[in-house]
Length: 125
Length: 209
Image (tube, rainbow over all chains, first blue to last red; front, side):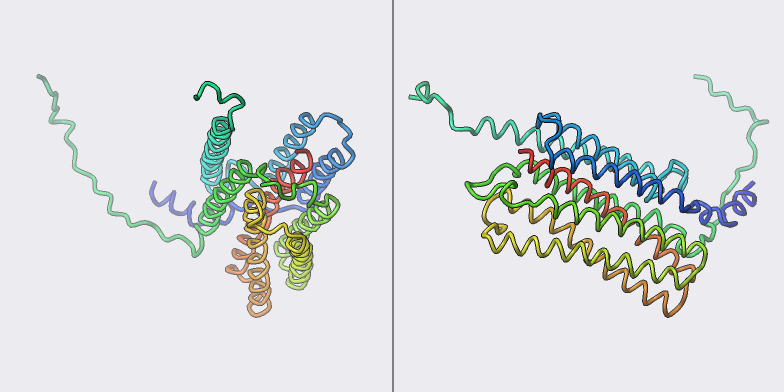
């Protein structure tokens, strides 16, 4: 048994983890990225959507999709590489990033609100 | 209080004395480098969070609308995106063991990277000339820290690229050089991923504020 796993491990098990890169993969990723970059710039430059809040949400959605496109087509992320450890590291990082970002923005937003000069100081006298 | 110890089941103890088997050299490099990139990701996440908190504090100074030129940002974005696809072509050439093509695509990637840096530096110089220095407001401090850190990464990526081109020129596409080129590939594409965040949150959202 141990001899068996050994040979599997040694016989390019690691090398095979890096899948072949393909021209079509890169071109697909590039094409998608161009579209996903051009549309947000066009939306903001022309103000095509009118509403700023809506535009902000749309360009954030485009950014999120483009990040996934880059991860798949350029960084070749998949659940199989390195026995799934790259994906585990990525998921862990995403959790940390979400906690750090939302936590900071949330706390500081409320701090900002509480530190605002009060409109009516009469109650303080 | 009954512990059933069946004498028939007490078999000989088995000792696992097998050593950790040999890994081929550099077998864990890619995973290790990926974990480094994830830690880098945390740095950028904190810088983005800082920018998110401070990005609206202009201290009566210039706001994004007064400073940013979206067509320039678009040009910069396209430079980095083009450098990503040319690096991809370099990896394809490497896969086909074509040394000359690999070197050529790496050189083209480097030129796009240089163009990106040049545009960014001229933008920074223009801003500083107009008095929009990092110490002008919290918005500008966080802007220069975030975008500058990204630019610094690109700079080191370029230095690394020149180093690897020299390596490939000296030793060819040996296994170690392939591994190094794959690491730089991850680094370079990762910088492009960070730039997606920069142009979305800093430039585009800045113009919407």
